[in-house]
Image 1 (cartoon, helix red, strand yellow):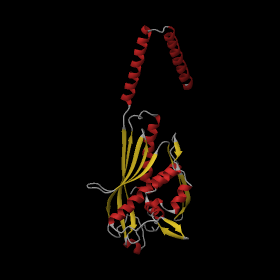
Image 2: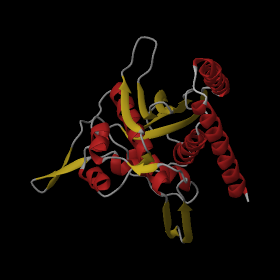
Image 3: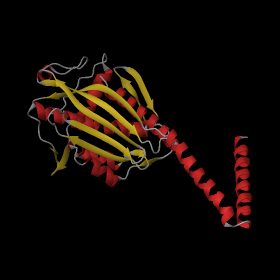
Image 4: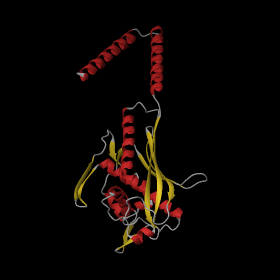
Length: 308
């Protein structure tokens, strides 16, 4: 019914325009054209003013706290002992073990691609960059959806995660992806290269991915930012900033390590903020509300995966 009404309205408008155009052509003269041009210009100006008054830039902000545990002797995330009483923190910190030990195979041997962080500043940088890369992996997984089933501590478990439906999602070009992640030390491993070679990162068309590092400055903390930007539409920044570190052996509640490992481990705490801005010029576009919903959905996934 709605389609028929729209179709009838469009036909009516077309016939009205055609009749008006025919009369103008048949009565072409300076006297006729003066009011036609005036009405045309006034109509354009009125339409422009009406649209501009309706457009409005907007912004969404969210924040969460999270932490990374490092073995200060090894200079990398430690092996977490599974604890049935704290499955979430166990799972979250265990995700860092694989990507936090990047290696490449050289002459048949696995060789580390990074230097061991020795100072507190180096460990904060290590952890912040690790979080930045982990955010990318969370977004990648959320965009593709996932399922998991099995047995945990003797109990049957299963989870299903569906991607958000959007009208303009496309695979991100591989060459642009590798260029964007090249400066993050945790992307340089055989495991991560294999992952990205066999995975499509799905993002809305026109989106540009950037991984940005802002060094500490006077009065400002070191920042690791993952940016998703579509020119004229949005810029979504996920910003990782340090809070503080604990003393040796002080770990998040529920984390279980061997006594030897626990004595040399410290917790590095961070703030992760989402700063999403949506441009005024396209605020009336039908896709803009999709992008707003998408930004909130992405941060909800980060909250679930990273939040303390």
